[in-house]
Image (cartoon, rainbow, N blue to C red; front, side, top):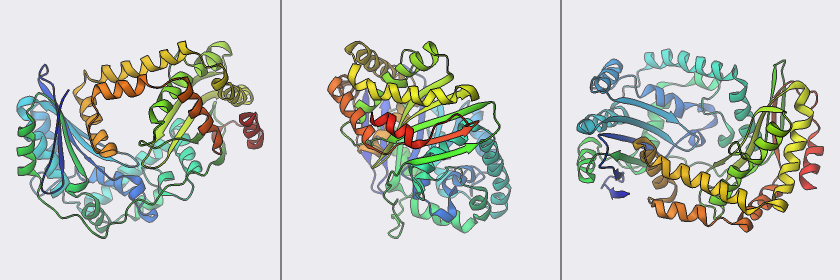
Length: 420
């Protein structure tokens, strides 16, 4: 990896990962803001901005934005997370300048037209409706809210019908002024380009803007845990069981990733083999780890039939409780190799390398070499995994369940199983 980083006078950090064997470039701006930086009354504003910034600027119509990037065979998109919002594009190497210019244009010169906002509200409300009609989307919002109740980290990224309808143009303008400042932006690129080229483009395209001094920072998040049961007449029950995980900066971050892989990360994982293959109780089951600035969430998802609901959670608890006792080196090595291979395979993708670089800069303030990443994964031993399991089980569990739940046992019983 030939990674280089330059901080501009306006505070923006420009990062490149050169790949001489490709003909394209993935690039984008990652902004250090997301759902958890919103006020409760404007929940969903970060996501709405993701939409609205593509709706026309002082120099381009919404149609022109799409046509210009697609005229050179490129593509442009964006996404909103709980702590990050990203605007990214992929272009051929000779069109890097256009890609940077368009992204800079939408971030700095968007009209945020009031009439366009009202039209886009309808689109976002349909998006919310679609999510509400998708149980395996809804369940994760319910899990997040139960784990972090009455906190912005627990609020839905899309917002709610009430908060979206109430958004005004001035809300959007104020949010942009507060959070879309160069000091909160990472301009990252990976592919066939020179670092100095991207620095020059950034200097030309991104105007210097002083950071707002009065913007509120994200409130500290506190994991609480608890339960949420949403009984619905569905064909399948959607079950999630979670625990307080770790932040990106936690020393056990990579040990948790290895544990999640061996516990529920693939077809050879314990949950897949035991709950699906041996018992046939589910079609889908997996574990996941979500990390944030100062906290995290480790969870298990299972989709099962009404008649199997009663058996799934007890079996998951049984596997969870015994993994630290009968962990063996073979399955640990398999999990490490899965993570290591995924890391190395991602290096073949310009977009994966670009996003990884940007996230490393936001989380750790510096890029991590491949050698360092691999070393952190390989350093995870049995003692580290057992430590992780012990830490997870010390937290109050979170249960979110949706669908036919008649057979789902009481939360107190679940907690006792985990403590056994």
